[in-house]
Amino acid sequence: MTQRVIVSDPDVMTGTPCFRGTRVPFKNLIDYLEGGHSLGEFLRQFPTVTHEMAVQALEEAKESLFARIA
Image 1 (cartoon, rainbow, N blue to C red):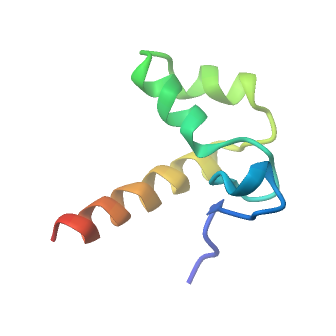
Image 2 (cartoon, rainbow, N blue to C red):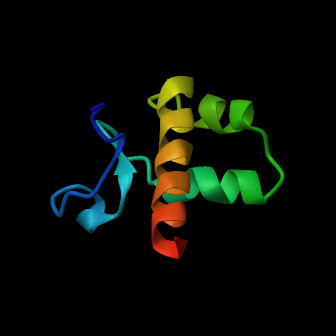
Image 3 (tube, rainbow, N blue to C red):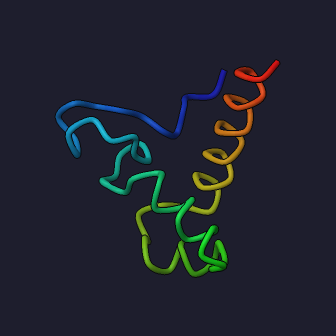
């Protein structure tokens, strides 16, 4: 199994779910997309997050949502 890209560590950003190895909250990606911005814009603003990390994070969120409503 692939290692999760969104992690919560009490020592990093007080436990806010962030992209692994960064201090970038996952919520920032959601906020960008909700605001009508592109994934490319998000990645330019947060260069420590790769395209692959962002796509995997969205997949993880989708799987989590489907698991909750199933």
